[in-house]
Image 1 (cartoon, rainbow, N blue to C red):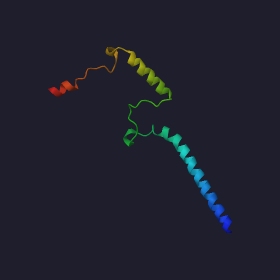
Image 2: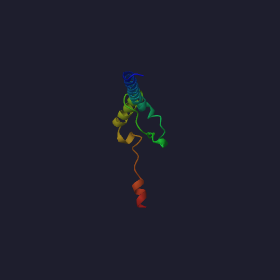
Image 3: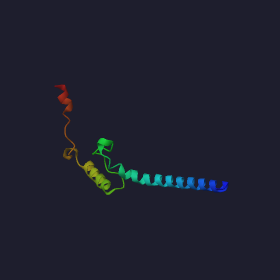
Image 4: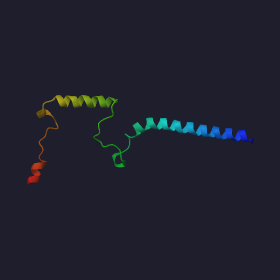
Length: 91
């Protein structure tokens, strides 16, 4: 193999490898956002009570429900229960 052909083959191999790695980086960026939701909590995933991601239909529903609860009087809210944990500690 002549000297120039060897350099051309090496340059072509490096170019193909770098293009392949660049493609993996852009694909992984898109896959990682969706895959992180599928990881269970015991394996380091998100807890069950995490709100949905912005831009999804569930996020819009979550924000509407949050706004509805915010506009309700405090006495009618589900989460407006008296905190008795401090009273239990004093006994």
